[in-house]
Structures are given as C-alpha cells and as structure tokens.
Image 1 (cartoon, helix red, strand yellow):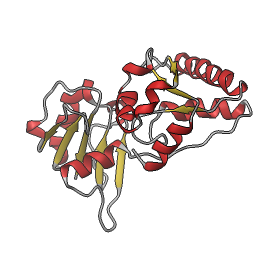
Image 2 (cartoon, one colour):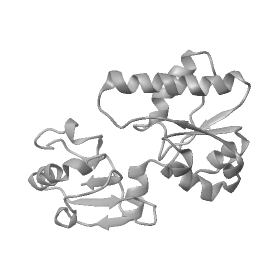
Image 3 (cartoon, rainbow, N blue to C red):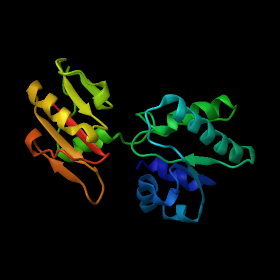
Image 4 (cartoon, rainbow, N blue to C red):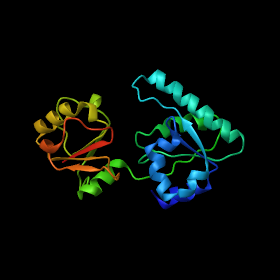
Length: 208
C-alpha cells in the first residue's frame, strides 16, 4: 500500500469494500495490517457478484453507489478499498462513475497494479526500451494466437488455464506466473510447463 492510501484510510469515517462481509475480503485483510485502527471504523459491504452479464452487474453497481451516496448524504467520508490499482479492471471505477453523477466528489488514489507487483516478485522488467506491453483481462479476449510484438500480461485466466497454456506454447514466448502475489500462500512458476492447469482467481502470467 502507498503511504497516501494509509493516511486517507485513517481519515475516513467509513470503509467500503466489495463483498458480503468487509472483514472477510482480501482487500480488508491486507489493509488492516497497514492500518490496524481500521478495525474500529464503520464498515460498509457492497455486494458485487462475479458474473459476466453486464445488465445484471450494472444494477449492482447502481445499488452499491446508492448505499455509498446515502452515507455521503449524512456528511460522512467513505473510502472504498480494492486490490491493486483502482484504475485497472477495478469494481471501484464503475461505482465511482455513478456516485460522481449523483453530484458527490470522488477521488482515485493510485495503488500498485498486480502485474507490476508480480513482475517485481519475479525480478523481471515488464517492458524495456521500445517494447510494447499488452494487458489481457480474460481468456474471452484472446485470439487463438498472440502474434503482436511486445510483452503480455494475462489476468483472470485461471478457469481457462489449459487454453492459455496452449496459446503460450504456440507463441514461443517465455512465460512465468505468480499466484496470490504478496499473500502468505504466494506461488511462483518459471515456465509454461510448471504452471498447473487448476489455478485460483489471483493468477497472473507474464509472457515475454
């Protein structure tokens, strides 16, 4: 976490997080170690199902924004904690737009993107000189090959890892993977052949 994030969490009246129980979320567990006084703050769970139906999930974004807006209307400050950086595939960005449209002031506090943390953990640069970096959010976004020049980051691919591994083998690129980066159960894999077929949600691949 950044020092700015720690300072602002301390200043917040309420801490919100996506999930049924804020205390059980990964974001809260991590943040609590840096800001132990967060345990005494009011917590605001924002239910956010992991589904691909845009209309369905947008309704939850609206409901979550209304819950937060209700607290803001009371004159309280609300901090929304999330994993990684809130500008990269983050639930916060969707809710923030709705809250902002309601007339409330919103601010992004930059964090450490998961792929930057994973690259640092593996001791490799993501891009050098004039290399291009491609960030792919899910297997649904992939073509059958990855022919573009540059390096690749594959996020949220755990459920289709067999397909991802086949694409990587065909590409001829060198791939590494970090699972649960920065967590107690972090695992590192240094080649496509080492990567298991069954991986969790927080599995990130870097291919160069």
